[in-house]
Length: 313
Image (cartoon, rainbow, N blue to C red; front, side):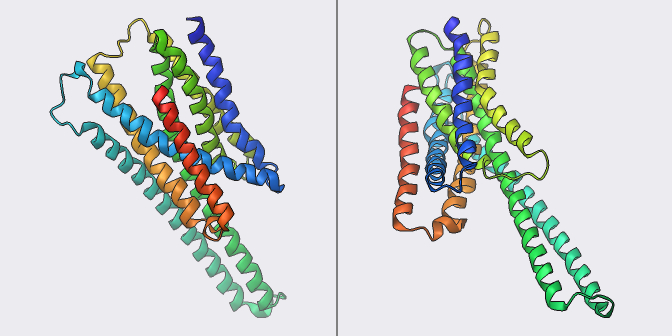
């Protein structure tokens, strides 16, 4: 029990360190060394999150549903189907959120064009030249597009963090109810898991910009990840005496949540992280050979280390 209680604070520190490191590095992004450090952490964290979804969570969900205590499932593909459901759930949220942002941007753009047309009609009454007004309009349009892109990025990071928080609390519960010789290796694996996963999430949070209460909102997002696994451990300690990890209800519940988390993170890591970083970002589309090599190497290294940790856990 003392080690279980100590795990609450150990994982709290590890999670806070992991997520706040890239946020701290982003403050020095104009300096070349820190910019490279943030680049490495970003792609390394992406590899960790992708591997967490596929190697750790999907395998864990299949293992739960394949337990002998369930007496076999009539539909053997249940865990894979739940993973697919998780993918579609986050896809729908992402699609609807993207449509809302796009329509709002189009509405704002239409209002600005209408305002510009009214200004042109009253050109005799306005002292500013047409060329200056056009420059002002183009600058305003650029600012609007930038704001829309930031809103979309905020939405994507929110979805990603939601998936991570969803599964982090479950692994905290799983750690707290584990006993015997398996506890210490599991704890060590989760310490590194939370640090690496926090780096991936923190590198995305560091890119966000809020017009109001910026520091407070960044703090809330980092704080939520920092305490999530520790909160799961506290919940697990509270239910430890009545919780049976191999009961039918527990296996189905944990297996379902794990599979949903896998689907959410699978979509988030491939669509929001890999696709954005490598196919939509001008930084990587026009990157040199050395930078491309470093980025791919960090992506693969993050997945490799997480795969090794998944074996311990």
